[in-house]
Length: 386
Ligand SMILES: Cc1ncc(COP(=O)(O)O)c(C=O)c1O
Image 1 (cartoon, rainbow, N blue to C red):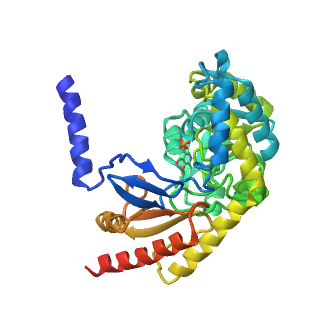
Image 2: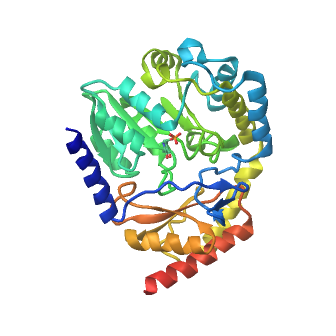
Image 3: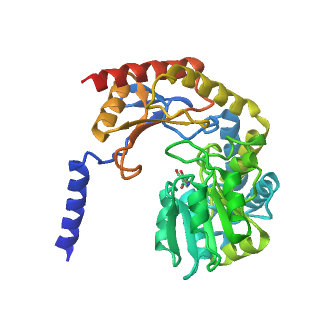
């Protein structure tokens, strides 16, 4: 038994290695928001989701420290036991007011929020329709849920409209901004396509804070109000955790039945306190979104002649190389020049679309973005000439 288990692990690891797809965790030491040190070498980080540069902002760091002084470290229990403190309540209320929902249910991560919603709400006989590029947390939850899952072509509203039926409860799930491509879902069209026929859920992990007036995200930007909105705190908020925004009854239902909420220790109250401060910063510091826009414009001008660059309107700017080995070579060559950009390979992205996932943040300077663009051009030219 034990031997068979070990063999299974060894085979899977060897397969990953032989495909050049082995992933490795590297310990980094942050020097500031955009520079870190790894094995004694400094790198410019173009691979973080800290889009607004809040993760190292002194005001947010102090908010967390103040929260620690007020509330101590951990929450001590799951939310329904004694882990839910006043700081969590304030955070939920701020999220509801900002995003226009009756309830906000907090989770430890976006991954668990997505899984909790799909596992809790779907029943046998339901039809779940997902954009085929939705995040792994959504795809996996859908596949394991009791519902029948179908995937519609990426951002293809016509295809979605063919799949929606009037015979079943339909749940349609899309992201606001797609994590690996940086493109935006046509939310207004999706919303009018599903209208009363389906429950609409939007995972706006990469749009909240970055898009829309006061950073209220992709749905605000599109003028829609989905039944369920998932926002995550590990990206533009500079912290971690997530919330599901919904109406009162759905919130009550999730509070009773969402196992990832009920049976998991609540986020620390000090973190909830810091998250409330992050919301204020996101709402009032428009300069961060303006700066991102400015950096994006510079990057686009520098790379306008490179047809591998899909120049998106979000901080995520993928450079699709295609071949996995070449993508790794380009990432390694960038690293030799002090720039850190992650190579994203299958199975995270479809076969043949390995890419560099460049992300810009409000913490970068114009000079750093120009340096990235110039180095990218030099390196990609040198490697494709080989
Ligand atoms: C679209 C999307 N949803 C959910 C998640 C998971 O969020 P978290 O990192 O908070 O678990 C991610 C993470 O990258 C994501 O890209």
